[in-house]
Amino acid sequence: MSGGLQRRSQPGARHMFILELVPVVATPLIGETLAWIGEPLYGAAWYAFMYVVLINVVIRLRPSVAGESARPGRFDWRVAVLLSVVVADRLLVLSMPPFQTRDLYIPVLWALPLLIGGILVRRGRQPWLVLPAAPLIVVVTVASLALGTVTAMLVPPGGWRVEIGAPAVVAAIVGAFAVQEWLYRRVVQPVAMRVWGVAAGCIVASVLAGFAWLAALTFIWSINAVTLIAVIVASVMFGYVAAIGQRGVWLAALGCAAFMTALLVYQSGSVDGAHPLNLVGFPN
Image (tube, rainbow, N blue to C red):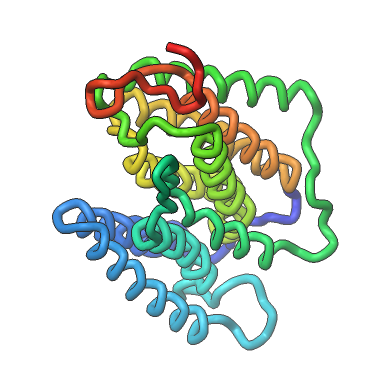
């Protein structure tokens, strides 16, 4: 665990924790409700509005002196920073059009701005790719592959929303979700751990990352109870390893890629209820 992360100590910390969670929970719930009862544009408009609000909150509340903690009894500006990443992610997913040609349909171009944003917030002299010990890599990878395979096996017939595609489609989707996971563990989770402590921060970040997964996955197939449970288990596991530090962040992204690869490669379900899913060109 990162020893430098200490929970904010102040009177009424539990009360402030609850108050700070209200916008973190309410913002995505309102956005997804608007997108569900109306259309994606309604949800995107809500997230765009909230992004502007959050930027103003950060500007107004951030201490002029470089301190880490907000004043006692005051909303912590870092919560607005954390929430702005979630809002930007959902805004991009709902508003960016897919890449489409006669043979390819890739609905995950939203990952490109996320990747650029993650690179920009990365601290300059940190190594690009560092991983923890081999046994932990094996455990996380195998568990991710197993979760992805079980999820794919139990997708209901006709539940897939991705047309038959080339390996490029699989690679694009896997890469997009890995980038999304990397950004949440690289930016959202460290902020959450600094504000609320390691344990609570990991839980909050894992809930937000799992929510982002599920919301984005609805563009690929119909979500069922098995998908929900698998994403929860995977997100908690990735949150735990990401608490290790930068090494764990990369492992979380690797695990996410393994989960999505297993899910997409496994031949299950059907497209429009007629043709077997064959995303990677395997013979049926």
